[in-house]
Each structure stands twice: as C-alpha cells, then as structure tokens.
Image 1 (cartoon, protein in one colour):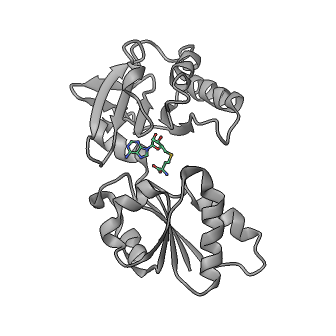
Image 2 (image 1 turned 45 degrees about the horizontal axis):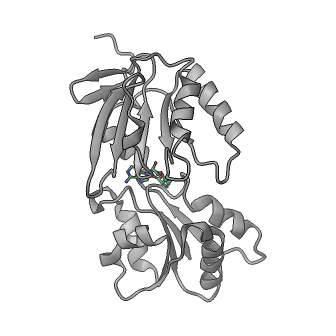
Image 3 (image 1 turned 90 degrees about the vertical axis):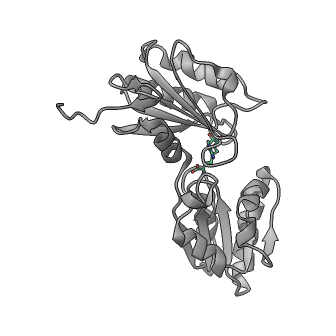
Length: 241
Ligand code: SAH
C-alpha cells in the first residue's frame, strides 16, 4: 500500500487523524526533508527516504518500487498532496505500471485554507489557486490564468509567490491583475501558516509590499466585494444584513 499523505501546513493540530494513522501504519516514509522534519516524532524507527526538491520523480518511483516488495509506504507532502503535491505524480507513474500498486490519497489542510482561517473569511466566495512557479508551467499560461481569473473577479490564492531566483514574478503578476483589480482591493499575506514564525499582514493592491513575501507565504487577493475589518479580511457570501 502507498499512502499519499497531505500533512497540513505545519502543526499537528492541522493534521488529520487519518494522516497520522497512515503515517503510523507505514514502514517507509518518503518525502522532502522539510516535511519529514515536521513529523519527526511520528516516524521514529521507520525507514526514511528523503532527497532534494528536484528529485520528485525518482522519489515517487522509489515509493512504487518499495511498495512492490510488500512494504507500506507513506509519501508525504505539506498541505494537501493533491494540490501542487505528490498525489498526481504518484498516480501518473502508477498508471504506467503493469502491476498497479494499491494507493490511497489522504487529504490535508492546504495552505490557502490555513491562511484563510488566519485572515478571517477571505475565500467565502468563488476562488481559485494559481501557482506562480514556472518550473513545470510556462509563464505565458500563468499570465493568461492570472488575467482571466482577475477579469472574472475570483478571489485569487497565489502559491509559490516569490523565490530568490524569481523575485519579480509576484510584482509581474500584480501588474497583470491591476487591469481588473482596484487599488483598494484587499490583499492578505500569511507567512509560515501553522509553523514557528507565523505572520499575517493585510494590505491593499496599492500598499502591497512584495518584499515581505517568500516561498512559505500565501497571498490571497480579494474580489470586488472583499473588505478589511480591523485585522480581518472578509469576502461577503451575499447575505442581506
Ligand atoms: N501541497 C501544498 C502546496 C505546495 S506548493 C499545500 O497544499 O499547501 C508550495 C507553496 O505552498 C509555497 O510556496 C507557499 O505559497 C504555500 N505554502 C505551503 N506551506 C505553507 C505554509 N505553512 N504557510 C504559508 N504558505 C505555505
């Protein structure tokens, strides 16, 4: 059996019981080292296979090979494994195997949901996830999605918003959305959701500070109805009050 597990954004409270049980049942744990370190106390004495971020394919292939030897394997991702995590890759690789491994995807609290709770209720209405990473997606596709999502007035949750190598992606994304998003559109920023150093900032399109955003940050951009109430961000569902 391969469990493909989302361990939530960082803290134990945001991990599901199903995820904890699946980890306990596994003989071998496969994952990126930052995620492994978040569950260290759960995996004492278990075999651990961790390698660098760019080796996702090898890591998932190894999980399939180990499962074929009769062991139970946990492939862990942060947040949810089906949202920019390992679930798709494990299932894609398994679909090419002659003898299909048994796979169970175990859901987790994704970063946008964790960040939304910290901010208040910013994703109460239709929203979308867009990753600004162009490692696996052409930048033109990302630009098109940003433009159309902003035009359709979705609340937009940005994953992979800014790294050292691609520090300008976030400001470029804002330039594209600016055509449709007013200057007073609320922008919620949450760093390290559920981890040490959790930080939240509520700004607007005009007062946005790109410098505070890094790769463990969620950026949530409101729709035309979203407003700021003190330290909260609220997107009305449409109730007449
Ligand atoms: N599978 C993960 C997403 C992986 S993509 C999930 O479902 O959450 C990595 C991006 O997710 C990061 O660049 C960041 O934008 C976001 N992210 C992951 N963990 C986070 C956390 N604890 N706090 C804020 N953002 C986080």
